[in-house]
Length: 448
Figure 1 (cartoon, rainbow, N blue to C red):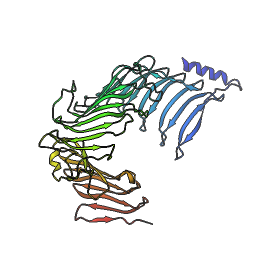
Figure 2 (figure 1 turned 90 degrees about the vertical axis):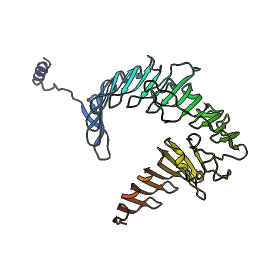
Figure 3 (figure 1 turned 180 degrees about the vertical axis):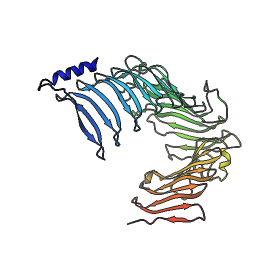
Figure 4 (figure 1 turned 45 degrees about the horizontal axis):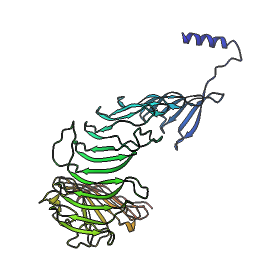
C-alpha cells in the first residue's frame, strides 16, 4: 500500500516542475591516514542530521547512529571489522535507553545491559564465548550500584564477588547506593576455586583488614562453595594522613604455607615503612631485625652477611623444604626447596647492580627478569621464558635508557629462528637466522 501511495505521489509531482523529493546527502567529517572516510554524516538541505556513521580503514562500516533534532535518537548498531554485528542499542533524545546487547562473532549474546536516561538500571549479565556465565551487576532506578556483584571464569568457577562499589562516576557508569559508613567486602578466587584475596571496603575504597592466600596448595575445594586457602599476607589498608587511599597501615605479617610467620612489617600513619621489621625462620625463631628508623630497608641474608640485600620470596614450604628471605641467600639448592608451589624469588648477585626476579612453578623456573637499580631508573633490563629448565621462547635485553638491546628466540635452550641486535639508538645492527647449535647461521646484510 505504501509503495502504491509513493508511486501515486511521485506521478503527481512529475506533472509540476517545482515539486522535488528532499534527500539527505553524505558529508565526510574525517578521514583515515589512507584517505578512506572515517566519520561521515547524512544531512538534509536545512541542516538537519539524519544519521552519523563511523568506518574502518578498509571501508567496512563500524557504527551507525540515527539522529533527530540534532541528537542521537533511534536504534544504534556497531559492527566488527569483519562486518559482524557486535552491539545493538537504542538512544532516546540523545540518551541511552532500554536494553543494549553485545554479541560475539557467532551471533551469540555476550552481555545484556540496561539503561534509562543514560544511566545503568536493573540486572546486567554476561557470558563467556563458551556460554559459561561471565558476570552479573545490579543497579537501582537511579543508576546506583547495589547488591552483590559477581564474575566467573570460563570454566564456571567463581572469580570475584563483593559489594565494594565505587561512588558515582559518569565515565565508569558506576555508583554506590550504600551508606557512607557501611563496611563492605571484595573477594577474588583462583580458577580452581581457592580464595586468593579478601578485602574490606569503605566508601568504594579498599579499607580495613585484608588477607591474601596462597594460590595453590594441592587441596581439593568444592567448586560450588569456594573456601579459604592458606594465609599468605595479613594486614590493614586505609587512608593515610597524607590523603592517599588504600595504603598499608600498621602491622603486616607474611606467612609460610604451613602457617608459621615469615616476616613482619610496620607502616606508619603516612603509609611509609616504619619501626622494626622482623624475619623468622621456619620454626618461628627470630633471625633478623631491622630498625628502619635507623638503618633503612634491608631484606634477608646474603651468604651469612646480614648487612647485604640478597633475596626475598613470596612462598615458603614447611619444615624440611624451606625457602624464605631469611636464609635463601645464594644457595645452589634452593630449587629443591620450592617443590610444586608457585614462588616469586627476588635477589641480587654479589658484584652485580641488577635486581633479579624469578617465577618458579612445579619446581622449575618459568620466567626470569632483571631490573636496573632505582639510581639508574629502575627499568626492565632483561626478560626470559623457560621450559623444563631451558630457555624457550623470546629473550629480550634492554639498555638502561629503555631502548631494546636484542631480541632472541630459543627452542629447548637453543637459539632458533630470527635473532636481532640493536645499538643504543635503537638502530638494527645484527639480523640473523639460526637453526640451533652447530647448525648453519644465515646472516642478513644490513643496508646503510
